[in-house]
Image (tube, rainbow, N blue to C red):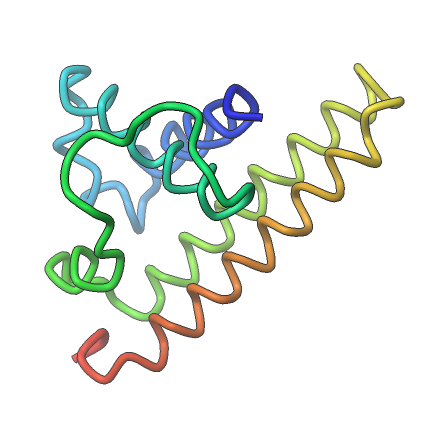
Length: 134
């Protein structure tokens, strides 16, 4: 499962780092020494969200999702764009399994649907946080 999550995270970051709306938030990830550890950390975060556990220790301090993103000064439209890119990435994964491993598609759809539910949960948390969009 972790390998699959890593692939999704890596694919998403390839999009986000070059995205016209979001790319500037990810400029520091042009350095592989920064990006690699971050991808591992975010993979661990999503593994915990999707499975309730992590198969590799997560480096660094505990996740403070809202606090970390508050410091970025994210705009409401940027949050929406992040969600669009993430959903596109999950849909691409489903399409890839549909053509390359259709027997695994039901399990992949189950994973991506849960992932989308978690994204929706975080979207609401961000949108309702009083200090998120000033």
